[in-house]
Length: 479
Image 1 (tube, rainbow, N blue to C red):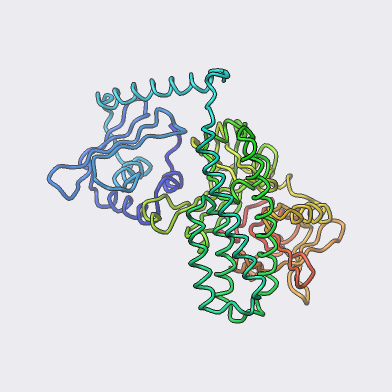
Image 2: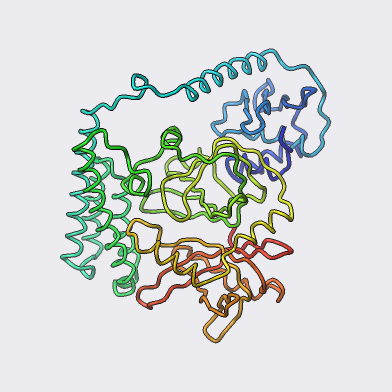
Protein backbone atom coordinates (compact mmCIF):
# COMPACT_ATOMS: atom_id res chain seq x y z
CA UNK A 1 0.00 0.00 0.00
CA UNK A 2 1.20 3.50 -0.81
CA UNK A 3 2.13 5.62 2.19
CA UNK A 4 -1.05 7.29 3.43
CA UNK A 5 0.03 10.85 4.15
CA UNK A 6 -2.36 13.76 4.62
CA UNK A 7 -1.07 15.27 1.36
CA UNK A 8 -1.82 12.08 -0.58
CA UNK A 9 -5.33 11.81 0.90
CA UNK A 10 -5.97 15.48 0.11
CA UNK A 11 -5.11 14.73 -3.54
CA UNK A 12 -7.90 12.12 -3.65
CA UNK A 13 -10.59 14.46 -2.30
CA UNK A 14 -13.15 16.03 -4.60
CA UNK A 15 -12.73 19.51 -3.17
CA UNK A 16 -11.64 21.49 -0.10
CA UNK A 17 -15.05 20.96 1.52
CA UNK A 18 -14.64 17.19 1.41
CA UNK A 19 -11.19 17.49 3.03
CA UNK A 20 -12.64 19.56 5.90
CA UNK A 21 -15.62 17.25 6.41
CA UNK A 22 -13.40 14.17 6.45
CA UNK A 23 -11.06 15.63 9.06
CA UNK A 24 -14.05 16.77 11.13
CA UNK A 25 -15.32 13.17 11.37
CA UNK A 26 -11.95 12.05 12.72
CA UNK A 27 -11.82 14.92 15.19
CA UNK A 28 -15.32 14.07 16.46
CA UNK A 29 -14.45 10.35 16.84
CA UNK A 30 -17.37 9.40 14.59
CA UNK A 31 -16.05 5.89 13.82
CA UNK A 32 -17.58 3.05 15.79
CA UNK A 33 -15.20 0.58 14.18
CA UNK A 34 -11.77 0.91 12.58
CA UNK A 35 -10.20 -2.17 11.01
CA UNK A 36 -7.47 -3.26 8.63
CA UNK A 37 -6.35 -6.54 7.15
CA UNK A 38 -3.09 -8.09 8.29
CA UNK A 39 -1.37 -7.33 4.98
CA UNK A 40 -2.51 -3.70 5.21
CA UNK A 41 -4.12 -3.66 1.77
CA UNK A 42 -7.63 -2.96 3.08
CA UNK A 43 -8.93 -0.38 5.53
CA UNK A 44 -12.57 -0.68 6.57
CA UNK A 45 -14.83 0.64 9.26
CA UNK A 46 -18.21 1.90 10.40
CA UNK A 47 -18.97 5.59 10.78
CA UNK A 48 -21.92 7.28 12.46
CA UNK A 49 -24.36 8.78 10.01
CA UNK A 50 -27.69 10.56 10.02
CA UNK A 51 -29.63 7.27 10.22
CA UNK A 52 -29.86 4.55 12.85
CA UNK A 53 -27.32 2.30 11.16
CA UNK A 54 -23.69 3.38 10.69
CA UNK A 55 -22.22 3.67 7.22
CA UNK A 56 -19.82 0.92 6.14
CA UNK A 57 -16.85 2.22 4.22
CA UNK A 58 -13.59 0.78 2.92
CA UNK A 59 -10.43 1.73 1.05
CA UNK A 60 -8.93 -1.14 -0.93
CA UNK A 61 -5.23 -0.84 -1.86
CA UNK A 62 -4.74 -4.28 -3.38
CA UNK A 63 -3.61 -2.23 -6.41
CA UNK A 64 -1.85 0.72 -4.75
CA UNK A 65 -1.74 2.71 -7.99
CA UNK A 66 -5.53 2.41 -8.41
CA UNK A 67 -7.27 2.24 -4.99
CA UNK A 68 -10.93 1.25 -4.83
CA UNK A 69 -13.29 3.05 -2.47
CA UNK A 70 -16.67 1.82 -1.24
CA UNK A 71 -19.27 3.32 1.10
CA UNK A 72 -22.92 2.60 1.90
CA UNK A 73 -23.80 6.29 2.28
CA UNK A 74 -25.96 8.02 -0.39
CA UNK A 75 -23.42 10.77 -1.14
CA UNK A 76 -22.79 11.60 -4.80
CA UNK A 77 -19.26 12.73 -3.96
CA UNK A 78 -16.61 10.07 -4.37
CA UNK A 79 -14.58 9.39 -2.38
CA UNK A 80 -17.09 10.60 0.19
CA UNK A 81 -16.21 12.22 3.52
CA UNK A 82 -16.50 8.85 5.32
CA UNK A 83 -13.87 7.21 3.11
CA UNK A 84 -11.59 10.23 3.45
CA UNK A 85 -12.07 10.17 7.23
CA UNK A 86 -11.16 6.47 7.30
CA UNK A 87 -7.85 7.23 5.60
CA UNK A 88 -7.20 10.36 7.65
CA UNK A 89 -7.71 8.26 10.80
CA UNK A 90 -5.12 5.75 9.59
CA UNK A 91 -2.67 8.54 8.68
CA UNK A 92 -3.15 9.99 12.17
CA UNK A 93 -2.17 6.64 13.76
CA UNK A 94 -5.60 5.95 15.21
CA UNK A 95 -5.86 2.35 16.52
CA UNK A 96 -7.05 -0.07 13.82
CA UNK A 97 -8.04 -3.62 14.79
CA UNK A 98 -6.59 -6.39 12.61
CA UNK A 99 -9.38 -8.51 11.12
CA UNK A 100 -9.80 -11.03 8.32
CA UNK A 101 -10.67 -9.90 4.82
CA UNK A 102 -14.49 -9.50 4.65
CA UNK A 103 -16.18 -12.04 2.36
CA UNK A 104 -17.94 -9.42 0.23
CA UNK A 105 -14.63 -7.62 -0.45
CA UNK A 106 -12.95 -10.92 -1.33
CA UNK A 107 -15.73 -11.64 -3.86
CA UNK A 108 -15.42 -8.17 -5.38
CA UNK A 109 -11.66 -8.56 -5.68
CA UNK A 110 -12.11 -11.85 -7.50
CA UNK A 111 -14.55 -10.32 -9.98
CA UNK A 112 -12.22 -7.35 -10.51
CA UNK A 113 -9.32 -9.72 -11.22
CA UNK A 114 -11.35 -11.49 -13.88
CA UNK A 115 -12.30 -8.19 -15.53
CA UNK A 116 -8.66 -7.07 -15.48
CA UNK A 117 -7.51 -10.36 -16.96
CA UNK A 118 -10.04 -10.08 -19.77
CA UNK A 119 -9.01 -6.46 -20.41
CA UNK A 120 -5.31 -7.39 -20.59
CA UNK A 121 -6.05 -10.22 -23.01
CA UNK A 122 -7.92 -7.79 -25.26
CA UNK A 123 -5.04 -5.28 -25.18
CA UNK A 124 -2.40 -7.95 -25.78
CA UNK A 125 -4.27 -9.61 -28.64
CA UNK A 126 -2.84 -8.69 -32.07
CA UNK A 127 -5.18 -6.53 -34.11
CA UNK A 128 -6.18 -8.57 -37.12
CA UNK A 129 -8.02 -7.17 -40.08
CA UNK A 130 -11.18 -8.95 -38.88
CA UNK A 131 -10.92 -7.63 -35.31
CA UNK A 132 -10.24 -4.01 -36.22
CA UNK A 133 -13.11 -1.69 -35.52
CA UNK A 134 -14.93 -1.07 -38.76
CA UNK A 135 -15.68 2.52 -39.73
CA UNK A 136 -19.38 3.28 -40.07
CA UNK A 137 -18.95 5.31 -43.23
CA UNK A 138 -22.51 6.63 -43.30
CA UNK A 139 -22.38 7.85 -39.69
CA UNK A 140 -18.92 9.35 -40.22
CA UNK A 141 -20.02 11.15 -43.39
CA UNK A 142 -23.05 12.54 -41.57
CA UNK A 143 -20.91 13.87 -38.73
CA UNK A 144 -18.25 15.31 -41.06
CA UNK A 145 -20.89 17.08 -43.13
CA UNK A 146 -22.38 18.55 -39.97
CA UNK A 147 -18.94 19.70 -38.85
CA UNK A 148 -18.24 21.30 -42.23
CA UNK A 149 -21.53 23.16 -41.95
CA UNK A 150 -20.37 24.35 -38.53
CA UNK A 151 -17.03 25.48 -39.97
CA UNK A 152 -18.84 27.54 -42.62
CA UNK A 153 -21.15 29.04 -40.00
CA UNK A 154 -18.14 30.01 -37.89
CA UNK A 155 -16.49 31.51 -40.96
CA UNK A 156 -19.63 33.52 -41.69
CA UNK A 157 -19.73 34.88 -38.13
CA UNK A 158 -16.06 35.87 -38.16
CA UNK A 159 -16.48 37.47 -41.60
CA UNK A 160 -19.42 39.54 -40.35
CA UNK A 161 -17.42 40.73 -37.33
CA UNK A 162 -14.47 41.74 -39.52
CA UNK A 163 -16.58 43.42 -42.20
CA UNK A 164 -18.63 45.48 -39.74
CA UNK A 165 -15.55 46.26 -37.67
CA UNK A 166 -14.72 45.76 -34.03
CA UNK A 167 -15.95 49.27 -33.24
CA UNK A 168 -19.48 48.17 -34.20
CA UNK A 169 -19.54 45.47 -31.51
CA UNK A 170 -22.03 46.97 -29.07
CA UNK A 171 -24.17 45.06 -26.55
CA UNK A 172 -26.96 44.49 -29.05
CA UNK A 173 -24.74 43.10 -31.82
CA UNK A 174 -22.81 40.93 -29.34
CA UNK A 175 -26.09 39.34 -28.17
CA UNK A 176 -27.03 38.72 -31.80
CA UNK A 177 -23.68 37.04 -32.52
CA UNK A 178 -23.96 35.02 -29.30
CA UNK A 179 -27.31 33.64 -30.45
CA UNK A 180 -25.77 32.65 -33.77
CA UNK A 181 -22.75 31.12 -32.05
CA UNK A 182 -25.07 28.88 -30.02
CA UNK A 183 -26.03 27.18 -33.30
CA UNK A 184 -22.48 25.87 -33.55
CA UNK A 185 -23.34 23.56 -30.67
CA UNK A 186 -25.44 21.50 -33.12
CA UNK A 187 -22.49 20.87 -35.44
CA UNK A 188 -19.97 18.94 -33.26
CA UNK A 189 -17.50 21.83 -33.26
CA UNK A 190 -17.38 23.02 -29.62
CA UNK A 191 -13.79 24.12 -30.05
CA UNK A 192 -14.68 26.50 -32.88
CA UNK A 193 -17.70 27.67 -30.91
CA UNK A 194 -15.48 28.55 -27.94
CA UNK A 195 -13.03 30.39 -30.21
CA UNK A 196 -15.83 32.59 -31.59
CA UNK A 197 -17.24 33.23 -28.11
CA UNK A 198 -13.80 34.32 -26.90
CA UNK A 199 -13.95 37.29 -29.28
CA UNK A 200 -17.47 38.23 -28.16
CA UNK A 201 -16.63 37.92 -24.46
CA UNK A 202 -13.46 39.98 -24.96
CA UNK A 203 -15.40 42.74 -26.72
CA UNK A 204 -18.25 42.66 -24.20
CA UNK A 205 -15.94 42.99 -21.19
CA UNK A 206 -13.68 45.73 -22.57
CA UNK A 207 -13.93 49.28 -21.26
CA UNK A 208 -13.24 50.48 -24.79
CA UNK A 209 -12.80 48.65 -28.08
CA UNK A 210 -9.52 50.49 -28.67
CA UNK A 211 -8.02 48.82 -25.59
CA UNK A 212 -8.47 45.33 -27.05
CA UNK A 213 -7.67 45.91 -30.73
CA UNK A 214 -4.34 44.05 -30.68
CA UNK A 215 -5.63 41.07 -28.68
CA UNK A 216 -8.84 40.84 -30.73
CA UNK A 217 -6.92 41.05 -34.02
CA UNK A 218 -4.63 38.22 -32.88
CA UNK A 219 -7.63 36.07 -31.90
CA UNK A 220 -9.37 36.76 -35.21
CA UNK A 221 -6.22 35.74 -37.10
CA UNK A 222 -6.02 32.52 -35.06
CA UNK A 223 -9.68 31.72 -35.73
CA UNK A 224 -9.16 32.36 -39.45
CA UNK A 225 -6.24 29.91 -39.50
CA UNK A 226 -8.21 27.34 -37.50
CA UNK A 227 -11.20 27.59 -39.83
CA UNK A 228 -9.01 27.09 -42.90
CA UNK A 229 -7.18 24.10 -41.40
CA UNK A 230 -10.46 22.60 -40.15
CA UNK A 231 -12.15 22.92 -43.53
CA UNK A 232 -9.24 21.28 -45.37
CA UNK A 233 -8.89 18.47 -42.83
CA UNK A 234 -12.60 17.64 -42.61
CA UNK A 235 -13.00 17.78 -46.41
CA UNK A 236 -10.08 15.36 -46.83
CA UNK A 237 -11.59 12.94 -44.30
CA UNK A 238 -14.98 13.16 -45.99
CA UNK A 239 -13.38 12.22 -49.30
CA UNK A 240 -11.47 9.32 -47.70
CA UNK A 241 -13.31 7.76 -44.72
CA UNK A 242 -10.25 5.62 -43.96
CA UNK A 243 -8.06 8.70 -43.47
CA UNK A 244 -6.98 8.74 -39.80
CA UNK A 245 -7.49 11.60 -37.38
CA UNK A 246 -4.69 14.13 -36.96
CA UNK A 247 -2.53 12.76 -34.12
CA UNK A 248 0.42 15.14 -34.52
CA UNK A 249 -1.17 18.55 -33.86
CA UNK A 250 -3.91 19.98 -31.65
CA UNK A 251 -6.23 20.40 -34.65
CA UNK A 252 -8.74 17.72 -33.60
CA UNK A 253 -8.97 19.17 -30.08
CA UNK A 254 -9.26 22.72 -31.46
CA UNK A 255 -12.20 21.60 -33.57
CA UNK A 256 -13.73 20.03 -30.49
CA UNK A 257 -12.75 16.36 -30.32
CA UNK A 258 -12.40 14.97 -26.77
CA UNK A 259 -9.67 12.33 -26.93
CA UNK A 260 -10.44 9.10 -25.12
CA UNK A 261 -7.61 7.21 -23.45
CA UNK A 262 -8.35 4.19 -25.62
CA UNK A 263 -7.81 6.36 -28.71
CA UNK A 264 -4.49 7.68 -27.38
CA UNK A 265 -3.39 4.13 -26.69
CA UNK A 266 -4.40 3.05 -30.19
CA UNK A 267 -2.28 5.78 -31.81
CA UNK A 268 0.63 4.94 -29.49
CA UNK A 269 0.64 8.17 -27.52
CA UNK A 270 1.54 6.42 -24.27
CA UNK A 271 4.76 6.87 -22.30
CA UNK A 272 5.81 4.11 -19.91
CA UNK A 273 7.17 4.31 -16.35
CA UNK A 274 7.23 8.07 -15.89
CA UNK A 275 7.87 10.20 -12.81
CA UNK A 276 6.62 13.78 -12.70
CA UNK A 277 6.89 16.63 -10.24
CA UNK A 278 4.61 19.65 -10.31
CA UNK A 279 6.25 23.07 -10.38
CA UNK A 280 3.20 25.33 -10.60
CA UNK A 281 -0.59 25.19 -10.55
CA UNK A 282 -3.53 27.51 -11.06
CA UNK A 283 -7.27 27.37 -11.66
CA UNK A 284 -9.23 29.72 -13.87
CA UNK A 285 -12.67 30.20 -15.38
CA UNK A 286 -13.08 29.70 -19.12
CA UNK A 287 -16.28 31.59 -19.92
CA UNK A 288 -16.08 30.74 -23.63
CA UNK A 289 -16.12 26.99 -22.90
CA UNK A 290 -18.42 27.30 -19.88
CA UNK A 291 -15.92 25.42 -17.69
CA UNK A 292 -13.60 25.75 -14.74
CA UNK A 293 -10.08 24.66 -15.61
CA UNK A 294 -7.49 23.29 -13.17
CA UNK A 295 -4.07 23.52 -14.80
CA UNK A 296 -0.82 22.03 -13.53
CA UNK A 297 2.69 22.49 -14.95
CA UNK A 298 4.92 19.45 -14.46
CA UNK A 299 8.42 18.35 -15.37
CA UNK A 300 9.19 14.76 -16.34
CA UNK A 301 12.10 13.63 -14.20
CA UNK A 302 13.42 11.30 -16.92
CA UNK A 303 13.99 13.89 -19.64
CA UNK A 304 12.98 17.31 -18.30
CA UNK A 305 10.07 17.87 -20.67
CA UNK A 306 7.54 20.41 -19.37
CA UNK A 307 4.03 18.99 -19.70
CA UNK A 308 0.59 20.20 -18.63
CA UNK A 309 -2.41 18.60 -16.95
CA UNK A 310 -5.83 20.17 -17.45
CA UNK A 311 -8.94 19.16 -15.59
CA UNK A 312 -12.14 20.57 -17.13
CA UNK A 313 -15.23 21.02 -14.93
CA UNK A 314 -18.37 22.24 -16.76
CA UNK A 315 -20.26 24.86 -14.77
CA UNK A 316 -23.37 22.71 -14.48
CA UNK A 317 -21.58 19.64 -13.16
CA UNK A 318 -18.66 21.24 -11.29
CA UNK A 319 -19.87 20.39 -7.79
CA UNK A 320 -19.99 16.69 -8.65
CA UNK A 321 -16.52 16.57 -10.23
CA UNK A 322 -13.08 16.35 -8.67
CA UNK A 323 -11.42 19.71 -8.18
CA UNK A 324 -7.67 19.42 -8.72
CA UNK A 325 -5.24 21.19 -6.42
CA UNK A 326 -1.52 21.79 -6.04
CA UNK A 327 0.52 18.60 -5.73
CA UNK A 328 3.75 18.59 -3.75
CA UNK A 329 4.54 14.88 -4.12
CA UNK A 330 6.23 13.03 -6.97
CA UNK A 331 3.75 11.19 -9.18
CA UNK A 332 4.79 7.77 -10.48
CA UNK A 333 2.73 6.22 -13.25
CA UNK A 334 3.24 3.17 -15.42
CA UNK A 335 1.35 4.73 -18.32
CA UNK A 336 1.30 8.44 -19.13
CA UNK A 337 -1.10 9.39 -21.92
CA UNK A 338 0.12 12.32 -24.05
CA UNK A 339 -2.37 14.29 -26.13
CA UNK A 340 -1.39 15.45 -29.63
CA UNK A 341 0.53 18.71 -29.63
CA UNK A 342 3.92 20.38 -29.85
CA UNK A 343 5.51 22.17 -26.89
CA UNK A 344 3.99 21.54 -23.43
CA UNK A 345 1.74 18.66 -24.45
CA UNK A 346 -1.22 17.88 -22.26
CA UNK A 347 -0.89 14.61 -20.33
CA UNK A 348 -3.10 12.40 -18.21
CA UNK A 349 -2.85 9.19 -16.21
CA UNK A 350 -5.30 6.63 -14.84
CA UNK A 351 -3.16 4.93 -12.22
CA UNK A 352 -0.46 6.39 -10.02
CA UNK A 353 1.62 6.09 -6.90
CA UNK A 354 3.04 9.03 -4.98
CA UNK A 355 6.25 9.50 -3.05
CA UNK A 356 7.93 12.28 -1.14
CA UNK A 357 10.36 14.35 -3.25
CA UNK A 358 14.09 13.99 -2.60
CA UNK A 359 16.84 16.61 -2.93
CA UNK A 360 18.07 14.64 -5.95
CA UNK A 361 14.76 15.38 -7.69
CA UNK A 362 15.33 19.10 -7.29
CA UNK A 363 18.87 18.71 -8.61
CA UNK A 364 17.50 16.84 -11.64
CA UNK A 365 14.95 19.58 -12.33
CA UNK A 366 17.68 22.24 -12.16
CA UNK A 367 19.82 20.30 -14.61
CA UNK A 368 17.04 20.48 -17.22
CA UNK A 369 16.89 24.30 -17.22
CA UNK A 370 17.82 25.90 -20.55
CA UNK A 371 20.99 28.00 -19.99
CA UNK A 372 20.69 30.08 -23.19
CA UNK A 373 17.87 32.61 -23.47
CA UNK A 374 18.62 32.97 -27.18
CA UNK A 375 17.89 29.27 -27.75
CA UNK A 376 14.75 29.46 -25.60
CA UNK A 377 13.41 32.52 -27.43
CA UNK A 378 14.06 30.87 -30.79
CA UNK A 379 12.04 27.82 -29.69
CA UNK A 380 9.20 30.05 -28.47
CA UNK A 381 9.10 32.06 -31.71
CA UNK A 382 8.98 28.85 -33.75
CA UNK A 383 6.03 27.75 -31.62
CA UNK A 384 4.21 31.05 -32.10
CA UNK A 385 4.44 30.77 -35.90
CA UNK A 386 1.80 28.04 -35.89
CA UNK A 387 -1.78 29.38 -35.84
CA UNK A 388 -2.87 26.34 -33.82
CA UNK A 389 -0.12 26.48 -31.20
CA UNK A 390 -0.56 27.61 -27.61
CA UNK A 391 0.34 31.30 -27.55
CA UNK A 392 1.71 31.06 -24.00
CA UNK A 393 4.40 28.34 -23.96
CA UNK A 394 6.08 27.45 -20.67
CA UNK A 395 9.83 26.82 -20.37
CA UNK A 396 12.33 26.15 -17.61
CA UNK A 397 15.26 28.57 -17.85
CA UNK A 398 18.50 28.89 -15.90
CA UNK A 399 19.05 32.44 -14.67
CA UNK A 400 22.38 33.61 -13.39
CA UNK A 401 20.41 36.41 -11.75
CA UNK A 402 16.95 37.94 -11.35
CA UNK A 403 17.60 41.67 -11.28
CA UNK A 404 15.46 44.74 -10.80
CA UNK A 405 16.08 47.56 -13.28
CA UNK A 406 14.47 50.94 -13.90
CA UNK A 407 12.05 49.19 -16.26
CA UNK A 408 11.21 46.32 -13.90
CA UNK A 409 12.53 42.82 -13.25
CA UNK A 410 14.61 40.92 -15.82
CA UNK A 411 16.19 37.48 -16.04
CA UNK A 412 19.88 37.45 -16.94
CA UNK A 413 21.54 34.32 -18.30
CA UNK A 414 25.19 33.28 -18.14
CA UNK A 415 26.00 35.19 -21.36
CA UNK A 416 24.45 38.41 -20.07
CA UNK A 417 21.35 38.22 -22.29
CA UNK A 418 18.22 39.64 -20.68
CA UNK A 419 14.59 38.57 -20.71
CA UNK A 420 12.06 41.16 -19.45
CA UNK A 421 9.52 39.93 -16.88
CA UNK A 422 5.89 41.10 -16.75
CA UNK A 423 2.40 40.09 -15.74
CA UNK A 424 0.87 38.42 -18.78
CA UNK A 425 -2.79 38.69 -19.76
CA UNK A 426 -3.57 34.98 -19.64
CA UNK A 427 -2.63 34.58 -15.97
CA UNK A 428 -3.98 37.96 -14.83
CA UNK A 429 -2.58 37.44 -11.30
CA UNK A 430 0.77 39.12 -10.69
CA UNK A 431 3.81 37.35 -9.28
CA UNK A 432 6.57 39.93 -9.72
CA UNK A 433 5.81 41.70 -6.44
CA UNK A 434 6.62 38.46 -4.63
CA UNK A 435 10.23 38.60 -5.80
CA UNK A 436 10.96 41.52 -3.46
CA UNK A 437 10.11 39.23 -0.51
CA UNK A 438 12.89 36.76 -1.40
CA UNK A 439 16.45 36.90 -0.13
CA UNK A 440 19.33 37.62 -2.49
CA UNK A 441 20.49 33.98 -2.63
CA UNK A 442 17.11 32.91 -4.01
CA UNK A 443 17.52 35.29 -6.95
CA UNK A 444 20.90 34.05 -8.20
CA UNK A 445 21.92 30.81 -9.92
CA UNK A 446 18.34 29.55 -10.05
CA UNK A 447 16.08 27.67 -12.44
CA UNK A 448 12.95 29.68 -13.28
CA UNK A 449 9.72 28.31 -14.74
CA UNK A 450 8.24 31.05 -16.94
CA UNK A 451 5.22 31.51 -19.18
CA UNK A 452 5.79 33.59 -22.33
CA UNK A 453 3.62 36.19 -24.03
CA UNK A 454 4.22 37.88 -27.35
CA UNK A 455 3.16 41.52 -27.07
CA UNK A 456 2.62 42.30 -30.71
CA UNK A 457 1.61 45.92 -30.16
CA UNK A 458 4.82 46.56 -28.21
CA UNK A 459 6.96 44.38 -30.46
CA UNK A 460 8.53 42.38 -27.63
CA UNK A 461 8.46 38.99 -25.97
CA UNK A 462 7.99 38.94 -22.19
CA UNK A 463 7.69 36.22 -19.57
CA UNK A 464 6.09 35.80 -16.16
CA UNK A 465 7.83 33.70 -13.49
CA UNK A 466 5.79 30.84 -12.03
CA UNK A 467 8.38 29.10 -9.83
CA UNK A 468 12.02 29.28 -8.77
CA UNK A 469 14.11 26.17 -8.11
CA UNK A 470 17.41 26.72 -6.33
CA UNK A 471 19.74 24.34 -4.53
CA UNK A 472 17.87 24.72 -1.23
CA UNK A 473 14.18 24.71 -2.18
CA UNK A 474 11.44 25.10 -4.75
CA UNK A 475 9.58 28.41 -4.46
CA UNK A 476 6.16 28.43 -6.09
CA UNK A 477 4.85 31.84 -7.07
CA UNK A 478 1.68 30.23 -8.45
CA UNK A 479 0.05 27.31 -6.61
